[in-house]
Image 1: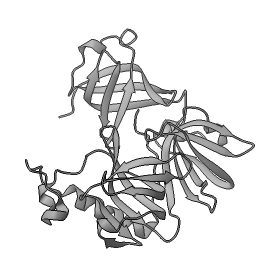
Image 2: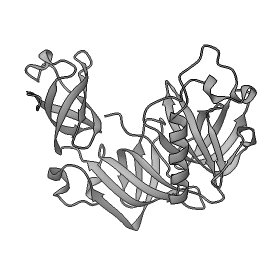
Image 3: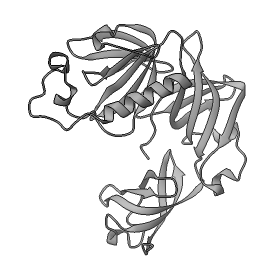
Length: 294
């Protein structure tokens, strides 16, 4: 399931600011034929809506702000710099106070609320801070070095894994379906392909130090998803199901030759999917059509 994104989350006050900024960005009106600059017109309604999809928050140092190409470079903690696009829809804050977009400059500490726009990363809002923010990283484990206590996590925003250091007191726990959380959790869950969410902070050396690791799934664990089939591709062997129990969307791979009756499925069907986690992705072992509840 391609739901894994690297993310740095602000402290509690900054989180509130981000929530307001995100809500404002969602109220941008429908696109107009003539996309004039909001700076020139003074009216954001001439711009199309901000890109949709799940937003994530990246943190690090802002470098190389280019107002001509509307882009800047963000040196993200634990990985290589990323190019991020912005425009008049992007809201900028300094220590919680709204500032004009033209006042965006290289900053030592920043958190950027982003969303994927095709193959690009777009900034919905930018928060520059006096101190390094706390963060959150979601992705699939690549490796864990027990001696160096270094955890490498793969995300969709970078080709390079994000690297985080664990403390002696770093907590590790499981979250999700009862059959999975019933078992104890520990560093033994930090194997290649495990899905994790990590809360961390940056130290003075630009390293990410993990405070808490939540394990969502471990390779070989069994899961049951039930809900409406929202997308289905026999050729690529991928389906997407919306599970009403947690209101989340899950992308699951399957082998049409190994799943009897998979060719009879249609978008909108109510189904149950028995799956395991395989190399960071859910893989169906059985798909069963269900009768919709009245």
